[in-house]
Image (cartoon, rainbow, N blue to C red; front, side, top):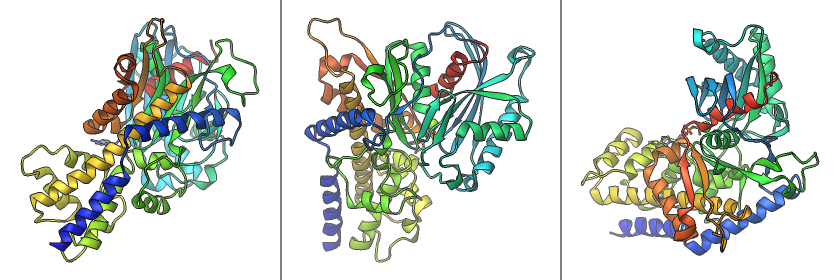
Length: 462
Ligand code: ADP
Ligand code: MG
């Protein structure tokens, strides 16, 4: 019928606009490299903030002692206690708490009081073998996965919120001061020794077990990347050159944008309706917070303009963010012959029943299009980093050098088809030889360990 043809038109047009042929990915990678240079040249020189992390030494494996880490960045936050015994000998204990949503848009004090309270509860569970030396202060590595302008390894002000957080009175505040004050309010004696972005923590955690780690990428609720830069390639750096000659840069790549990005009307509408319009455009087409929402918006248009789900538009389909990325992923991976999982998800989440197999196939195709675009653009971003540091090709006559990208985040970890599409794009972009020497490795919760390691190397007792 005409309606089905209309739905197919919407689908095909969407697919066309989401196209990521290799030539386009190369343009995106080149644009990423250009923006990296610009962001390193001056503050405000680019959409890419290219934040200086003050991490100029990555873990060596010699770190020892008991340290805490706190990871705040998404819907959950984790508290970790590690006992570092040197040479890969680590004992970890952790707890994970979800952040009540009212605290994500409330006041700075309420958020930090909650965090300090949970931290204190965890400290109270310290066992015999995890007691710190009498007379010394507990030390913490604070992983804070939002853009922060650091002033030192253990201090920095919040530039802005992302990923559904919006606490106005916290912007411009030093987050270490805020945490320290909250700990003081409840009498928890602990020193924040390192403030790190989760990408920087993941890089540090990855380097601890593999010296070839040169960058870290997060693909979770949001997305971001960090990498090791030559200190003399950072024109905006005014301080002394570090002894190591290196500096870890937190790119804040989620805010990347370029005319080469394949954006659609759905992305534009999603952005306009978001808490941070005009910002985090790369993040909004790649990361876990948004992929399911893009799918919903495409289906909504098909429902409205082509009566895809019948004469009335399903009410639930009008609700922002009802379709979460894990549910999209489950539909996309449905391997039952009659797409039972898709049918169940449609019924449970969108209250849509009586779909035909043909319709369910279309829905899987929308998921495929959205996930593939995100995965391939992530690969292009990584190529941009490799180019910037000259690791994208094998140098003639030189022993091939391995480069490892430490990867973390629930999207990469759980969304198999996303991960595979990303690897395929990497292989296509790099070619076989270079591709054999560039490895993407899942570093499961490497950022917590990394933050603890950085607290150790910046301990007041060192
Ligand atoms: P965060 O990024 O909040 O620190 P995670 O790294 O654990 O936390 O990532 C969580 C995100 O990963 C979720 O918001 C979701 O978008 C995505 N995710 C989790 N599970 C799945 C899944 N099964 N399939 C696809 N995406 C998933
Ligand atoms: Mg995280």
